[in-house]
Image 1 (tube, rainbow, N blue to C red):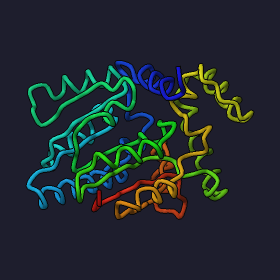
Image 2: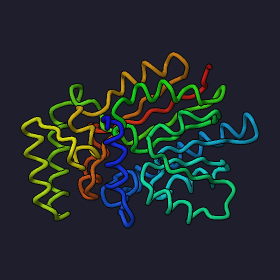
Image 3: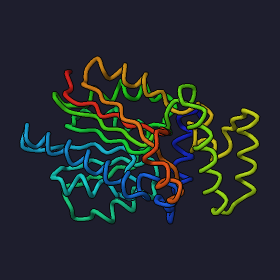
Length: 268
């Protein structure tokens, strides 16, 4: 089994039936972050509708459909892919009878890249840091975007080597403060020991699900440079952490931990 297969299987196992997406997801839990994403998605859908009269969206990794709802409400038709079979089943039940949403369980993580179809907008929310070879993924994904279409990705950790020491310390400190209230301490301690030793274990689910930690985040500048050849690209950065108190205290500060990519005006 190659590394990509391992990561996809870990995503499936780690997001089984009953998984709580909100608890560990700042973009779902914190109002200001969620509203910013909702506003951007709504604007992108409206832009496509104003150009062509419709908006076909590809949403990769929709979880339980928090932002699928936003896309549909804005007027889009949405094709959803999910690496988690349980989440795909949940989405099928949620949108049963709604012909605006089609749901597919993506067992390989690259199912959509093999489709002979184009979309006006591709959306990935808290997804890219789970993809081992994300630059190759973006390179193939851009071929699926219609002329003048867009790619929107958000909630990925900034590339660690370019982050400030203060940002690193704040992220670690606020994460550990939140983690103390989550239980399952034995696994947490074991994971932390591996991190400190620089060890990555492909047999351990937590190392695969949070693959970005051992890869030092996601290189936002490399993604920008790749997409800039065919899109107008905006990289936006912000502060994000799990704990509500720390989020409120630091979201207006100069600290930055995560980023989003809004690539528009595709030139095939």
